Image (cartoon, rainbow, N blue to C red; front, side, top):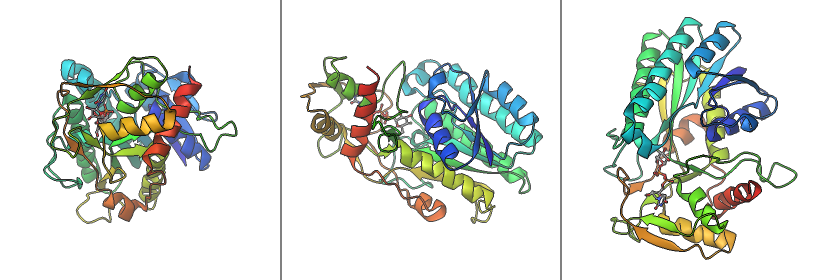
Length: 339
Ligand code: UFG
């Protein structure tokens, strides 16, 4: 297939594009490069730079695109609450324009980067897809709004358009440590504003920051720190290929009650606390990594762990990297390669 990957210069999009190319697909990356990096676009993909909705429309109008993987988004939870307009425009308005372009140009399938942030504070754990969606921040609200819009467009398409929303839990690690002959991962997290736990902890090990702040040790969890479900970027990317395969087989609409739009959580199903992540980073790096307890971060749920039963059953997805130390080791190899 020929596939368009929006946000293909970013962390998730670039690794998805790499996996698609490796599977023999042709890839067109559309990215405005505001947070992505030109040199992250994998070799073999064509890059089109500019406003995602506008450029996507141009690419789609020239024909030949069999499907879209839509990763382009604003994704900082804290910023989303301070600057909602940036998120409602960047995530929702842009995606609605993209959906209109897909309909106009008759593109039959879409895989969308949704988020566990759509659920908010869960009632129970692990979280299934039919759990209540009550996002606690603007980022999660915009991802949920897009999921709802996609469902409406699919339902109204009379079978001409189907989609899968993949709700990512905590994406981590790097691509290429084992596939690259150098042993150095080629693609990993390179955020200018870094807020994610694992890269921040690794910055301490690299001597780039003095200590890691642990946001709260009074959560109702075994060690009092927040629990998250860390999923390796390569497992995450693989799920996009499986979702495209399912859509290409026309199976989304066959799932009872889907209306042509499936929502699938992506996580390992195992939670690790902030302290356990720091311990894993200490083991992998051999650095003592000083940690300090800080106040809770606004909008953080205490525990977020996925039930990925649906992804396993419907997509045939099976994460290969469930070991936290292995995920951290890949992130560490990538972080060291960038200094
Ligand atoms: N944390 C710290 N100290 C830090 C950074 C993070 O203690 O310096 C804690 C957070 O409080 C949280 C955990 O580490 O409990 C993980 O935080 P991240 O920022 O790495 O990830 P989040 O769980 O907040 O959010 C991630 C993605 C979101 C997505 C969410 C859904 O960044 O886009 O997962 O699970 F919505």
